[in-house]
Image 1 (cartoon, helix red, strand yellow):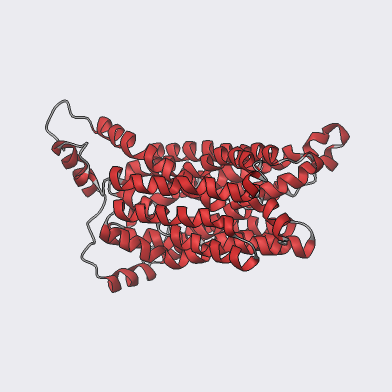
Image 2 (image 1 turned 90 degrees about the horizontal axis):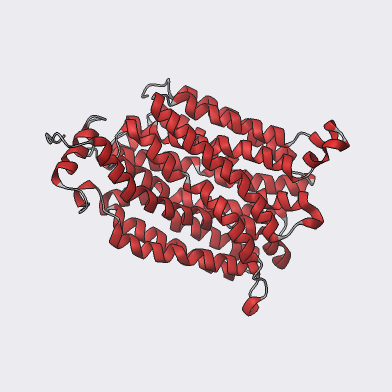
Length: 442
């Protein structure tokens, strides 16, 4: 730390926050929107290409097959070549594929493009989580991660009404609204990817906006967390991760989170449109879909800040999963029938929106504290590989959630059984967090 009496760690981290977090936030907004904008395109695609719920659910979920396969290798490459080059590559390639989604014309092409999109984006989120460990010590990390990952509900908050407006371009230049949606929401990823090459430093040592004293102070703060583990070779790295029971428990917890997150967000516009019935329009569905994302953004920041202020991670991670499960269960309650005609508004979209919002508060509220747990006992190369492994295994839930709901809708005509399954998985995920935070290596 600097001996300068005027030196302030708080001021240093405010400086780091201001230079990194807004930019990373914007990158993730674009990433998440390109991942889930297919949910807003669902009605148009299903109408124009005659997709059933099962076909759409499988295509929405198959993104995560490509994502999971390439996640760990991508994060290890980032560790070797540096964040600037690899994050730029990820963004440019996924932006190109996102635009190419406009060429989808049959189930096989829908599945193929979603699979390629998953390959292209693999490594982005865990890469940024690892990147933040190069700047923030453990006691400051939950807030930083929460602010970065608040991009996902904000992407829905902003992207939902924007997507509704883009869908209203139906017929312009002979393109369907959903085709305009994919093209116009894919281009920003390419442009931002190019900007990464110029703007993003690989770490504090490459940050021209830090002076020598500030770099030294950051290095000293990070040394307090844990010893460096770069001397591990790849085999020792993988064996160490595989043998650590905490990694498997946390992977299941993140799997549960992804089952809930994508089981909801991939179908939420469709469900809201069905509740609205004859009053449904793309713009109206987009505006109403933004409400749960707003709740998720607020929940994420508040839970992350409270977790950092108290230093408590365990219940700040498990508790939100239980809250989210409650939201899914409440969504199935026939409240309008229970309360009678005078409460008829609750039989419309507002009860569904309330329940969706409870679920999103839990889902996104868990994210900030969650990622401090693996990065708290893993450092260096182990952190890069461990975060990627947890994220990779966990994101298999992104395949299960939307695919399951799609098949259940075709088989039963309702999403009820799908949501019951999701609630159960979320409860088990919360239990896994509680077990992981007690577990020892081995």
